[in-house]
Length: 362
Image (cartoon, rainbow, N blue to C red; front, side):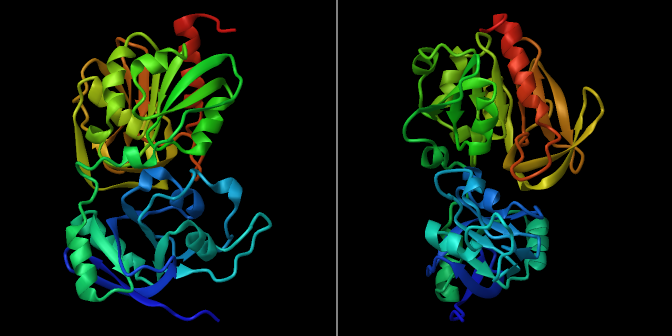
C-alpha cells in the first residue's frame, strides 16, 4: 500500500481544495485551471499539446479505470501543468492496458491531485471563469503565492514550447500537404496521411521553406493558448492565402481567422470536452464534437467569409469558409481522439478542395 501524499489545490482567488497527490510529486505546479467533460479518453486529453500551460480538471468522477496504452498517446510528451481528479482508479481493467494512469503520470513527469471535489471546483470555474491555480505538497501560503504569480495563457507564447523541433514526413498519398505544427496531435497527422504525403514542419517555418516542398495544401494545426502569440506562421499565411488551399483546426482556425482580418477573444471558461453540440449551418445537422480552446473568434468579425458552424451551447463561432480564397477552418477537433467521429468528413473536404484547385493530382 503506497503512502498517502496529502496536498492541496489553491486558486488565485483564494479558494482551497484538499486532496491526495498522485503522479510526479512536486511542492507546487501552477497553470490555468480548466475543466474537461470527457467520459473517457483521459490519456488522449492529457497528452494533447493544446493543454500546455493548463491544469486539467476532469469532471467525470472515476479516472484511470482502463489504464493507459502507448497507442493512445497524442504527442511526444504531455505539456499540461497537471491533472485533477475526483477518484483515481487504483486497479485498471482493459485488454489494451499497458500500465496504470498513476504510473504513466509519474513516468511522464506530470503531477496530479485526487480526492478533490471536482463538482464544486467546476461550478467555481463556471461562475468565476478559468483562473490560475497551483497544487502540490507545499504550504497553503506558498501555493497561494504560486497561483497568484501564474501568468495564465493570455499573451504567452506556448506554441514554441510544443511545436516539433525538426520537420518530418508521413504518408504517401497523391496530395502533398505542409502541416504547421502549432501543437499537432498524432491522430490528426494520421488522418492527413491517409490522403497525402504530409510534411509536418515547425511553427516558425517560413513561407519560402514551406513552398519549397511544393505543397498542394497547407494545414494549420491545433495548439495551445492565445492565437495572437502563434508567431511566424501568421506572417507566412500572407504568402499562402489565395494561392494554395488552407485548412485550419482549433488554434489553426483562430490563426487563419486573424490573418483574414478577424478578432479573437478569451472565453470565460472555454470549451473542453468530447460532447459539445455544433450545428452545421450549411445542412442544419447537429454534430457532437471534441473541443479544447479557451480563446475563440468573434462572430461577424471576419470579413469575406461564410460562417459554417455554431456551438449550440453558447452560440460561439465554430467554423467558417472564405468566399474569395480556398480556405476554411473549424474551431473543434474533427479527428476526435477522444470523442465522436461526426465531423471526420472535413478531411475529405480538404482533399476535394485541393483537387478542385489544382485539378486532378497524380
